[in-house]
Image 1 (cartoon, rainbow, N blue to C red):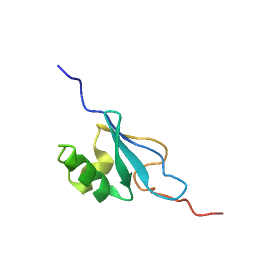
Image 2: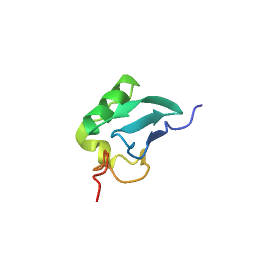
Image 3: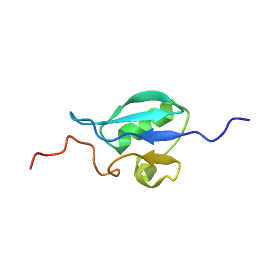
Image 4: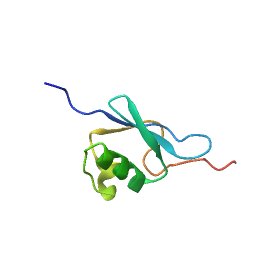
Length: 74
């Protein structure tokens, strides 16, 4: 029996957006929670965009779900 699905949202890229990876496969570059929800829907995982930030099965790497980059210069 396969284990739980592993969803990783990588840190923001220098040009903006965050890679979305499910079970080792990159699904795309998300620029907001709606993008994440759409990538997951295409992978067979239904989630409301409003729930993406709080889903316990999504591993946010780097800053939290409010940061999509690129970060402004100081």
